[in-house]
Length: 236
Image 1 (cartoon, rainbow, N blue to C red):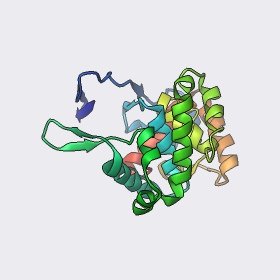
Image 2 (tube, helix red, strand yellow):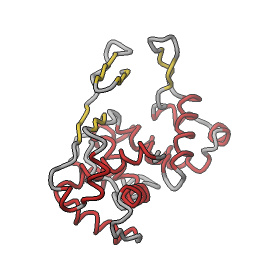
Image 3 (cartoon, rainbow, N blue to C red):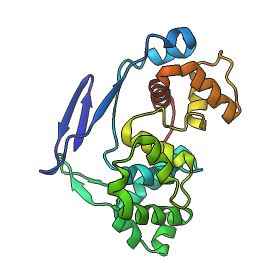
Image 4 (cartoon, rainbow, N blue to C red):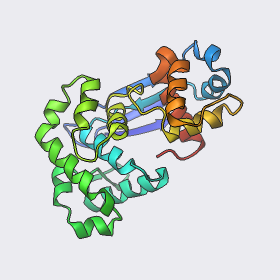
């Protein structure tokens, strides 16, 4: 499915006959945010309504989370694109160009050690293979689990911890209250969007602060803060 956005208009074009329409969720700054976080709310208000497609593939969401582990956002994007170009299925676009999809789990298991090395993915080889093996065995069962249970289940896979599991499930469901909202991305953009606010730098303490200030709007404020960062910098 090809998404084309011009202004406020979104056009979806199916690139194959059996492609289901992706689910999109819309996020708007909640009324209560201005009282709890006035400076941040002013910055986020400039975004207007933000639409985000759910990742339709739990496998891709999980593998993307693995690629994002530990490394800089810009580097993770580069590795993602190069892995797609080297081993993903190429889909023709209406303009005559092609787009490379993320490799299927079966394909990832066929990638050799040397090929991983050539892509600069030697340190991601083991977790990607473990995730692919687990997904092929349990993927259908995983998608039927409640969201908190899914996060727990994903952590049974080797080298998948709370950050990766939470990020993957947030990507898959658009429930950003499940995202590891005390991570560097949220801390960075909250500080930059509202520099006068007294933010805690410690990850654990910031998480408590963020959860308290966001309250019932945890998912929306986390997503909008990441969207603000996407507009003003590189968050991967």
